[in-house]
Amino acid sequence: MEAILTDCIRNSLQHLMYRNAIFMCERLCAEFPSEKNMQLLASCYLQNNQAHCAYHILKGTHMPQCRYLFALSCFQMDLMNEAEAALSPNESSSEVPNGAAGHYLLGLVYSCGWGNRKKK
Image 1: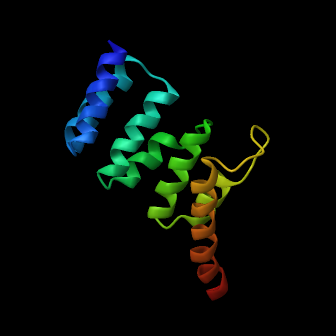
Image 2: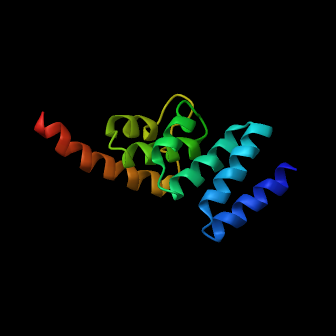
């Protein structure tokens, strides 16, 4: 059942049916709670321009892709310090999550955050 729901969600995302994907993914997470399924739900929220929902779902997650999506939601909400912390290497991983995309986002965070730090 989990695999069927996941396929339906990915199909909805492919056809730009974000509300449908969110609905099915919320059901998926309720029935099969896991960090992987939360990551999929957060992706649905981000594609539907609901960074605040993705932020609350991903706060405290540990998988590299979840950390990247959390940083992306922080960036969209102008929470540069949290985005930087999520992308920074930590004790569980010595790498920036999501490879080159993570480094790019970290560069954006630094360039946007630098203006905020300079003003203070």
